Every structure is written in structure tokens, then in C-alpha cells.
Image (tube, rainbow, N blue to C red):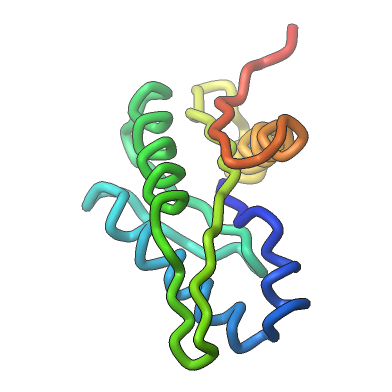
Length: 132
């Protein structure tokens, strides 16, 4: 799961049209960063998910870190508004296991890792770890 850091500030400061353009820039960077077998989807607002079929945790981390670095390095050009914005992203990664009973359970674990990334200062990738 991916969440653009401080996205509300973009909308509040520059307006929703600028926010929409920033979302398009973000989506382009994500599409360029993932593998052809991966699927990018928008959950809502500034939250996205990347489904990585047949991937192990280390592969998911590599793709997530590539997205994070590419987003951080890119200037988001909002030409209609004469803006150039720097954006970061927080990412929570989780690799499904046989004991996961549903897609919802998988998403909850990825979301927990995402919130850990947010609490840890943002602009990071956290891989979900089961607490025993």
C-alpha cells in the first residue's frame, strides 16, 4: 500500500485541480517503477496499492523502494499552476502467506505496515512483520 505524504497540504495550498495533476504525476512514476506483471490500483484519495503476483517479500521491498526513490527524486510539474512540487511516499509491504484467509486480511496487514511507515517519519518502506 502506498500513501502520498502530506497530500492534503497540496490540495489545501494549491487546490484540488493541482492535487489531481499531482496524482497523475505520481501514477506515472509508479507505473514506470513497477514490473510488467504488477498491478497498480487506486484505493481512494492519495492511497494506492500494488499487487505483485508470485512475489516474495524481498522482491516486494525492492519494487517498493524503487517507487519511493523515484517519487522522491522527481519534480512534480503542475504546469497549469506554474508549480514544481517535491513529493514523498510512505509504503507498507506485505507478502501473502497460506494462512491468510482473505484479500481483506492481506490489505489490513499492508495497511498496518503503511501506518508504521507514517509513524516512523514518512518517506519510507516498511515490511509487515507478524507480532507473536
